[in-house]
Length: 67
Image (cartoon, rainbow, N blue to C red; front, top):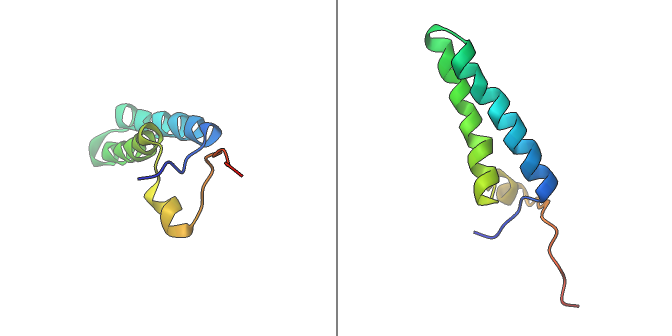
């Protein structure tokens, strides 16, 4: 897996992930499990790889070129 998430994208994913994950603690009943979706952006930020980006051919990671 080649990194395809840049530092700005990574920070945004962590903030969004924590925000969505907090719904788990504020909602009641079965709706609270929607907050677990916040684990997805947090996980992708931690491993610096987004499968959706690779499918779409996107890359926000700044890679140094040897040319």
